[in-house]
Length: 180
Image (cartoon, rainbow, N blue to C red; front, side, top):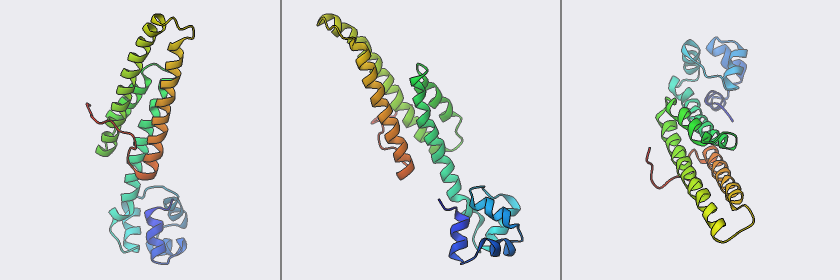
């Protein structure tokens, strides 16, 4: 993925060496920035001046990417329920409430709402399965079947939302009500 600096540089038909010379920075610095390092302070000002643009135009995309990377991390942290009971609520909650960006926090709350609803439904289904198994004298452990099925559904939701965050920068599967 191209950085904003690289896009602006290519629009001006400049090579990395020419940009380095114009901005009075080293070629290695330009290469690092185009590899993903976010420029700050003097470096940012020098590159912006050389590219004849405002400094915020060069870092805006990087900031947005950081927000969606944080949202993807919150989403994928819900998979910890495969190892730790209620990990799908604990870890996303910690990551959400430690987020500084409001958009990442908003997406995190939606992810957390999905996981709370999922955990509630899982609990209800597991408790109900014991009674159903006894009532109908079912020999196979219905408890395990429901647990595996619900874990697969949650895995699907997490993967689907992760893919959607990468492609559209939004959640594909979201709760109708956000109670957090």
